[in-house]
Image (tube, rainbow, N blue to C red):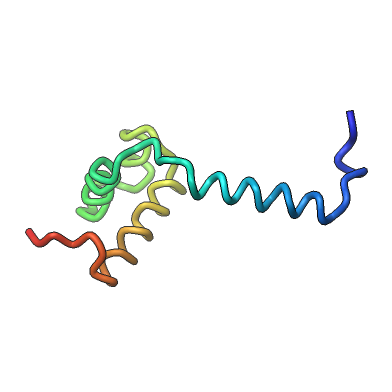
Length: 83
């Protein structure tokens, strides 16, 4: 087996590019509606993010990412259906 030290920088960058591409094209494990429901619960502020993340089986980092994505979509008007 070849150690990581023997890979060239360009090979590692190629691998990183491939991984990034796969991450962007893979379907999400949780639907948009589920993610939005979790974000809505978090935005209510009735519980700490750590508790909400735990209750829904995710990390705080994931929850913060979902909130950030939802905020960008909200400010750009993307996905807003009124209500």
